[in-house]
Image (cartoon, rainbow, N blue to C red):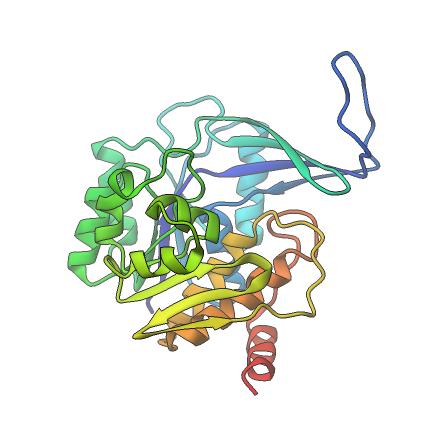
Length: 301
């Protein structure tokens, strides 16, 4: 049986809800609600794919600290067994305090961001991902591994996330290796230095036969020979957009895994991403495979 793989840092979110305003310096504010959850990134996408019944493999870094132990329990709960690439960091996970305000969010994070692989780590990830039908990419030092996997026949899906310095020049090597890239409108315009998401989509045709640009609440642009848009579903009430991109990616990759056409892959992504925003946190709200297919069938009628 084939599987989907990825390497990425484990993120832990400490979520404070029910806060009217941020405290000033020297002040203290109590929240009405609190949760600790696994956060976003590649691990969240793989968890959502596991929830959809697809076997996944994750390379990440975990330690013996209380946050890593929490993550280990959650990975077990979500049927994701990670390979640990930690080289001895005391707290190798990223920890974010997410303060949910009535109309916005604020974050304070601890950690190094992405995995920083050495030769041994790269080889361990390659052996983990070898044989995968799809591997999720991020610009984090595994470029040589991604090239080997592509030569093996693995489909590569790139997720960059936002970067103030993102550009074609900075990420060109990753764009050239990836089979698919799923930026949101802001990321797409930034990386292509264009003024609209439609201009960005046209620019990305230089790298991809099939182009995807997410339009948030307005759905998604696709190019598969011709340009088209897939509207967002209207029956999802947005509570918190944390993890929406990771959830979209899970639905999109589900479609790729089962060889659906690009427009249908985007429809799946709109469903999983739309469901995610209906609750606080990256992994609170989701659909299982039966629910996904049921909503999809109604959407294409």
